[in-house]
Image (cartoon, rainbow, N blue to C red):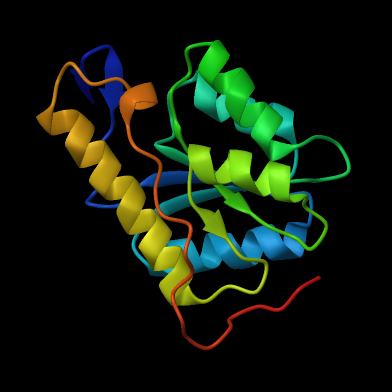
Length: 164
């Protein structure tokens, strides 16, 4: 573990420690498997309490969460984590029922993975997370809240999933 500017940055064999939080276990597992194939340590969870336990322990670099779910909105969780001082990189998974206002708020916090995603989409988001972490390491006074949001434009390729 390395500590820079109050941030604990874990280096995990070149990959990230990513929490995949999605109430749809199949979708979460599919994302987790793809992240692992891309060289990252992915933990798949289907409830907020499990994700929070990992984040609070400092055992994650990034969180990919459902933008909207039946239990809670991922964007609310992202804001709550920030208010509690738990600075973690956040990306969102979309469905089909988000409002424009919600999408705009999410784009300002992190990248958005479309519901129909490709390995290239996921790779792009995880590389953006790695770049943000390396920027924090090279600028010791930088906090996670000062990190610029990542691009939310998907990469064109063949879909890996098309779950609704």
